[in-house]
Every structure is written in C-alpha cells, then in structure tokens.
Image (cartoon, rainbow, N blue to C red; front, side, top):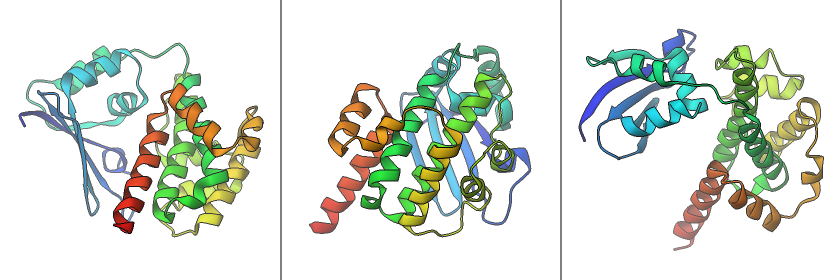
Length: 227
C-alpha cells in the first residue's frame, strides 16, 4: 500500500475541534485501493490519487472540503496543491442535494429499522450534505458544523449540528429530520407518501451510494446477528 501523502482535514485542520472531536486523516495512495478505517477517534481514509484527481475535476464535495481546508502532514510531492489546481466547481449541485433529501425522507419515515447510532450518523450526513452543497453552489463553501448551523431554520436541526455527539433515541432523530425537511427544504414533499420499495428503486435509479450502502450494512448486521 504505497502512500504518497498524508493530509489532515476536518475540525483539527480548521482548529475548531472540541472534546471528543475525531482526527481525520486522508492517505493518498498510488494504487487503486479505497479504504476507510475508524479506531476510536481516529478516522483514516485511503484514496487513490487517480480517483481524487478525477473527483476534483468533477467538483466532488469531499474533494472540495479537502482543497478548502486540508493541511499537509506528509506531502513531499505537493499532491494537495495539485488537487487544488485540478478542482473545478460543478455548474449545479442539485443532484447532491436531491440524493441527500431523498435519503432524509427515507430516514424520517423508515429510520426506526436502523440502529440508533447509525441513524444519527446518516441523519447528520443528510443535513450536512444539503447545507454544504448549497454553500458550494453559491461558491462560498462552508464545512464547519457551527457555521452550517447558522444557516438552518430548524432549531432542532441546528441543535443536532452543534451537539452531534449527544445521544438521541431513534424517534428523536426522526423528528429532527421531519422538522428540517419541513422548515429548510422546498418541494419533494410527495416523498412523505412513498413506500419503502419505491424509495429503494429511487436510490438505485439515482445511484444514491450512501443510502444503498447504509441499507446493505444494516441488512448484513441483522443477518450476522441472526446467525
């Protein structure tokens, strides 16, 4: 696993970390391996350079986060600067917002089938992705939870962003999503009446990777538990 560079990103790179903040490290690899490993408060992301460079040209939100806020820890060949030079904004981030909105509706209606920790993480992903995508589309990227919270009309969603490590039961997280969807989004309310099978068909059609991976992960854990 040859590693060309190691970058720090997230709250420690921004210097707005709090007690319990994760240390997020991106390892830029030279082969095709992609991996994410979490050990306690350490999250390691391994991405191949070719993938990152292509994602930069495609205006990917994760790469936008890197080029805006990452700090090089080990980068003798200047991969972070090369990533910044390759990055191009998309004309529209509406598809990113739509996928996160679809998943938020699904979680608001069917999230009780997930374990509470996974539901909380995915609810935060939906809310943050929608808000980040809006800021990036306006060419004023925002990634810090506290700054994102300032842009939210829903008081409960604002509280979730600011206190995201506070434990909540599944019903409470679903209520936050419903409040956020009602107060911060326009349109797509027809999803409130869609059944589970129709959601999954929509996830497949729109290549909603996070939603599909979450459902596979939960299904695999249930199968393992029953075994």
